[in-house]
Image (cartoon, rainbow, N blue to C red):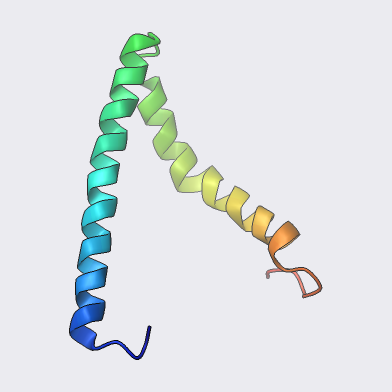
Length: 76
């Protein structure tokens, strides 16, 4: 992709950011609907922030360390 002009790369970045932003808004509204229908209150969305900010990246690093680097040294 480095052979693409900077303007094209910028447009790809902006389009990707817009898609991620829209998906985040939609995911947030779906979380609210699920919390309402399952009578979980705001705990579902609130715990999601904790899991998304701390636990999920840690799990991803562990998975990459265990399965993603076959034959190489572990992540520091």
